[in-house]
Image 1 (cartoon, rainbow, N blue to C red):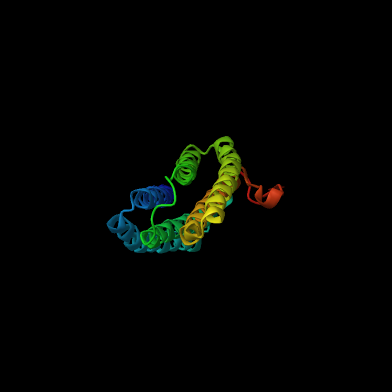
Image 2 (image 1 turned 90 degrees about the vertical axis):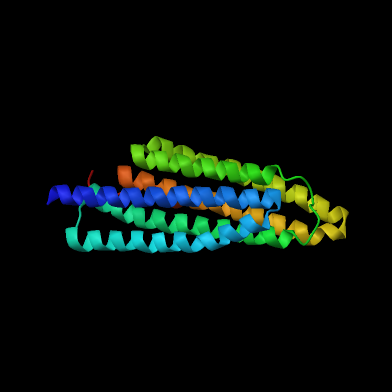
Length: 226
């Protein structure tokens, strides 16, 4: 019975890792569509959102089924409940990637405002955060998860820089206003992606240590055990 449970947990971990990989790739393709003004690629990204949604539903079902049938305790329970929350955050990142793809299609109506440098940099940082969160999950490394949280501050700072720069372009020329607004929204979506990865990192810390660090608070799950 114990061996079957372990296999089920491994299958769940495999699915959540697949979800992270899928969302990471979707983010990269959305930014590529934006940079290259590739409408066909943007449409592909938008259509791929359904696959992410279906996987989210499958993972949630796995988690609920495991809790109902196995009634897990301690770290196994923390793993399953954390996966459910991580699953939701990954799905939201996928939603944001498809929204960016949609916005990139809107931007085709206008001439390029400027060469895109910092927005793709923000996206690269988010993708690095996703990859590191996967590593932290696989390696059960709470220290690595904490470093991901620190990376969120870098994304926030870059967002402020992007916002100010685009605002300058908009103030200089009224014709830049519509495309400028779309680019600011895209930068904001990427900043929100980083917030979702930060949530994931916090859930990984909870899964490993039974310690809640959300919202600047720190509490220990005394009942869960290690």
